[in-house]
Amino acid sequence: MGLANEFRAGLGMPPGDSAIVSTNVPDAEQAFEARGIRAAVRGGKLRASFHVYSTSADVQLALDALRA
Image 1 (cartoon, rainbow, N blue to C red):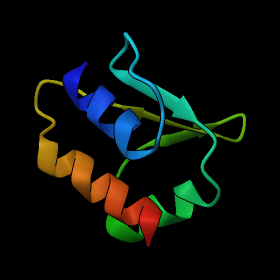
Image 2 (image 1 turned 45 degrees about the horizontal axis):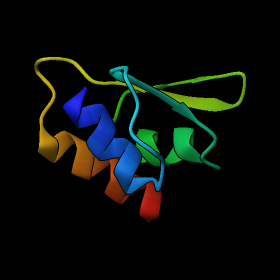
Image 3 (image 1 turned 45 degrees about the vertical axis):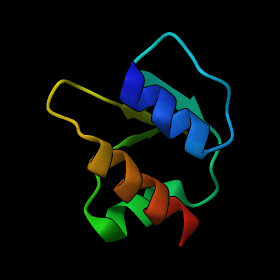
């Protein structure tokens, strides 16, 4: 959950209690695809999930992709 909360903070969201982050981010699917990041878009919402093999560098890569 720590990485998910790091991602939430980077998006300006409050902390949560899940390793899954679901939020509206315009063009997130295209931004992630361009950087080779795998995540889902369901019902128009980005759904990113963090696992034991995810790292803080992965979180920063995702945030950088969304900021580009």
